[in-house]
Image 1 (cartoon, helix red, strand yellow):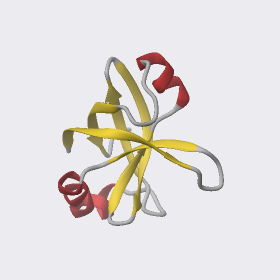
Image 2 (cartoon, helix red, strand yellow):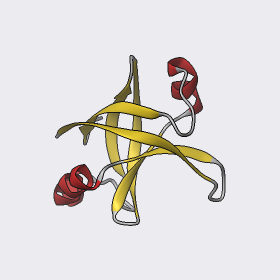
Image 3 (cartoon, helix red, strand yellow):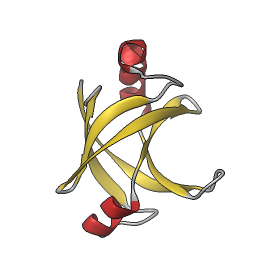
Image 4 (cartoon, one colour):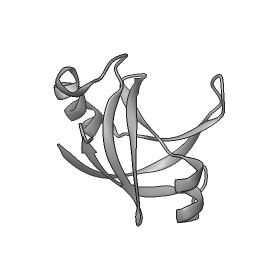
Length: 96
């Protein structure tokens, strides 16, 4: 499944500080439909992602009815983005 969308970089303090992109509801609903086929446990879903010119591999996880895409520091630095910035995201869900 290939998805494209725009969303804001958000900060989540949690047990450790992280930044994420909140996957919009429509795309989260699409992901939820195939989650059982692509999840490797705990609801985590492997994805190949691209923000700008930076490709990275990570896993989405469900939170409050949508999915969150972790955005690593290296990605933020490479693209010059920070919390509050809106970014264009490309996802390949179930990527290896």
